Length: 309
Image (cartoon, rainbow, N blue to C red):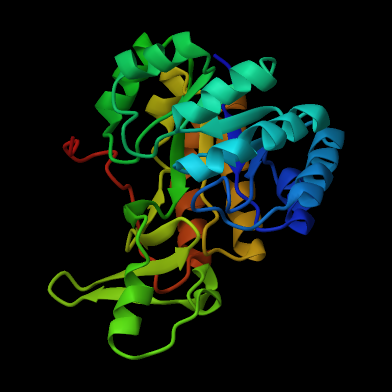
């Protein structure tokens, strides 16, 4: 049994070193034109600098190219892919087959991680994309534990699972907020509706508040609670899930560093002293609750619910 990778999403280059020092063994970065729902914007220089920092410390860097690409975007893909290949990124995260085909043609040595956010729901699909060239499948956040275990047992590729943070509930290519405000005769520029503007969709019936923002990829509505699996990792360890992801969207650096450190402690405890993990996991969860923002309740997502697919 091998330790899972601990993958985090920094918001900028300066966070990379600290998060790796806190225990991350991989980071995912990217720029909005090619990647979707990123914790922060990394231009080409930023990606190259992040790569140098991470590689010096033995961590990997994955670059998000998981947006949905329209015809006008396709000519841009080869140059970007060749740049990523030249600097030596460890993998490209993709959802659109256009990225896979472009990588095959222009940088066939690059590793690919298949991530469609919602449709990675069975082992057959994971293996299908594996046979097309992907080395990893990033599973949908709406899967329960039994489904994840079954997929991992039958997968021919590595499996990545999100274990902490918010997840996307809805995404539209349309600028729904901006269009609504325009209809109302109000000015809401795209710079005023980014991830850090704290816009919410309030559902009084369910007493839920959903973070919402718009960017080049459209409108995004996120979960009202943060997933937290720090005290429920045993089955994921036992089945050999390859990568645990901590999602950093709308989280500050101090919080991300502390969360990364706590998950590092959980992983190390289990693999060095399994009994100590069982004895400490509730304390780890209590510590996470202590640092958790008051407006973001922790739960276990869909891990222990009936899968919605």
